[in-house]
Amino acid sequence: MRSRYSAYVRGDAGYLLRSWHPSTRPATLGFDPDARKRPVWLGLQVKSHVPTGADTAEVVFVAKYRIGGGSVVRMREHSRFVREHGHWSYLDAVPPP
Image (tube, rainbow, N blue to C red; front, side):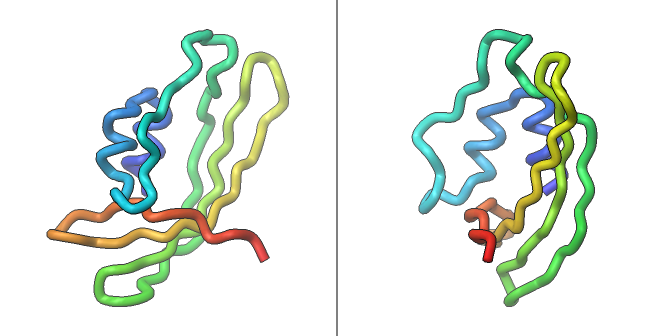
């Protein structure tokens, strides 16, 4: 989870795609070329990490960012991850209740 956050901070679409499970991975992932419209990432808090099986886990996190001179946005997500061939991949977000 932390490595994917770091990839968002760096704008590393390649890493994000490589760490996304093939069954849910989008074909492309782009970042807005206009620096004024890109988020400035302010921090990540992992709220919980729960193994849900031998090779599955769920992570709840809050990431904070700001775009331009706007207010701080708190993005909360409950994510699912799966481990295959020794590597963890982001699967998807659990829809809010």
